[in-house]
Every structure is written in C-alpha cells, then in structure tokens.
Image (cartoon, rainbow, N blue to C red; front, side, top):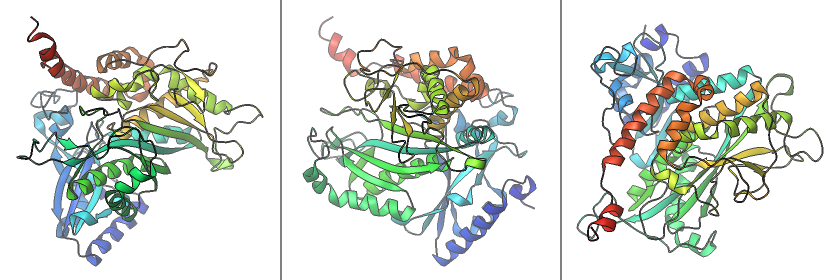
Length: 474
C-alpha cells in the first residue's frame, strides 16, 4: 500500500484521473514528467521524473527537502533548519527533513513546447500524512471549503498585465539576465497595428494556452512600452489559481524559446515602462436549492449589489491593508500605488470606476454582477492572493459588516491609504489579529518572517539612486 492510499489522500475521482494520466502518458509516448508545487512566492519547485516512474509517484508521492519552504526570494534559507522545530515552530521540519509532494492527477497537462514532457501540480504533506501548513494550495482549498460551509462556491477570473522584451544575449550589450529590448514605445492602448506587429509571438502564446486548456479570453496591447495583458474566463475553486500558475509558466517558457523574455515583475527598471497589475474578478455562487445562482446579484432595483455582496465588500475593505501583502508581495509592487494612474491608492469602492480598489461591475440583467479587486501585482502567489481576498470577504459575510457609501471620485475621496511599502503592509498584517486568526495565525507568522528577511536585505543594499544622489555631492 502506497503513501497516498495509506493516508486516503485521493478521492474516487482522483483515482480515476490517475489511471487516465498513466494511459495518456503511454499513448502519447511521453518520456518525462515535471512534478511540481507552488512555493510561498508562487514559484514552481519540484523534480522531473522518468515516465516509467510515474505510477510509483502516483502511489507514493515524491519527497523534496522541507527547506524549500524556508527561503526568501533570493533562495536564502531564512529559518534555522536544524533546530528542533525547523526554525518555524513545526517539529516535522526539524533537521531539514523531507516533505511529500502528492500529485493532483486532475492537474495533468502535456507541455508541447518541452517535447514529450508532462506536468503535474502537487499538494504537500508530512510523512505522517498530515498536510503541510505552509502549502499555499492547501491554504486556498481550506478557504474554499469555508465558503462551501457558508453555502457558496467561489468563482474567480483573472486579468494579468506583463512585459515582453526581446532578449539581448550576453556579449551583445546585455547580461543575459536583466537586459531586454523594448518591442514598442507604448502609449497606444489597444492598438490594432501594434497587436499585428506582435502577432507571431502572441499566436504562439495562444496556441500553447489553448492546447493546455487554459480558458483564454483575450490578449491585449496595454498602455506601457512592451506591455501586454491576458484575460481569462472565470473558474471555480482552486482551479483558478492553478490556471494562473500554469499560464505564467507557459508564457515565460514559450517566450524564451522564441527569443523573448516575459516578466511578471510589477515595474521593471526600463525606460518609460509602466507598472503592471493583476485584476481579480470575484463572485460567489449559491449552493443547494439555488445552485449556481450569483449571490452578488442585487435583489432590489437601483441596488448595485446584493446584501451578501455588500457584506463581502465590507470585509475586503476592513482587511484591505492586512491582505495587501498577499496581493502585493514584493518591494517593487508598491511603486504601482499612484494617484491618477489607473491603479488604486486608497481603501474604497465604487461602481464601475477603475480608480477604485474595489470596482463593482457586471449587470443584474444577465446575472454577471461581480467585484473586481484592482490591488494585486501579477507576480503574486495566486493561492495567497485569492485566499486572502476570500478570507476578508467571508469575514464580512459571517459578521454582517455594513458597507459604506461608494466613492464617485476615488482619487479625491478622503479614505485610508493602501500601504505605501512592503514594510507598511507587514505591519498592517501583524496588527490585524482578526484577519490573522481567520487566515491562519501560524502561516501569517511564518510568512511575515520570510518577508521581513527579504526587506532587511533590501534595506542593507546600496541602490543606484543613492549612488547618483550622494557620490559626487558629498
């Protein structure tokens, strides 16, 4: 009996899916399978196994070192792995021990660009069969289950902006790591001619995503130089976050094979480049007797949201500062919060106004009323971004918090400001004990520790700005 069966980790549907994966691997003559999980930063980590070993992995999982969960964005191990609790209060992580990646067979895809390679996304478990608290996919699943207990399914759509540069190789004026050539000068939003100029690579992107089953809606030319946006149709539950992970990986790897560099960094240090955002579209669907009905559709003429929707928004506003660290997890991302920039800078909501942090949009007539949260950056871990907003909204529903008036002029209305820096966001998270309890106090403490280490490294570094400002002057 394998690890997965011994701990009853697969549902009947997953057992059937696992059998189907093995059949497909054989039929398509795949030779390698990438077995991966999303770490705390939303980066994919894992191992590549021979296709002949896949049946064993689907029985017993695959071990990886637990210190992968203790690293900041530089790859530096933040917590003391050889202490009795692994440095983060969890005995199972002592001694840099292993955790077990358990593939979810429903996430299987064939990566055509990689040639004979499959892909499986995993959840993390300890050797005793207990879920790893730092597994962000598991954290989102628990938030989705909380919504189900309250009578709702979660529906999420995504719009991600990103930058696409032509790679400049080493020896040709570039470093091979951080240099790229702009594809256009920007400032021509939704230009059909600019879109035509990008048609070869955008067509390659589209073909890749369609073969993967990604629910692609549009590719769009954004306002900034070399800036694009991709929009996805909404999906339920954890699947929406799974898709964003797959999307980002597919775009970056496809771009690389065509001589381009795609980056989801919010604001690259390139001439005239604009910040990129991630707009998260959210609604709740009723379960039970009203199965599939939109819980945000207003009941009364003249209302823009149902009572449930108003409570949900009130929760997101109340916890906006605390949740921002999961929507904007990088130091760079806070440079986006500028007035009159089509990005939010304060905590408020409005009806169909893109300056607001929370934009209520859609129509009651076609049951499409939903909330667009415009706070996120495209580099965010999708599980943490969605889970943090869902946690805040569900707190509002459970506690029946009242929603204040809409802001007709979001950049002029007096309201709390969003955190201006990652440090401000971390302080807001630790101060909001109500949110931390709902989200998971242990995870919050762990995540804050990693991000504070990242921030300390930044504060210790000498920046280009400092050198320009002081080197000759003083």
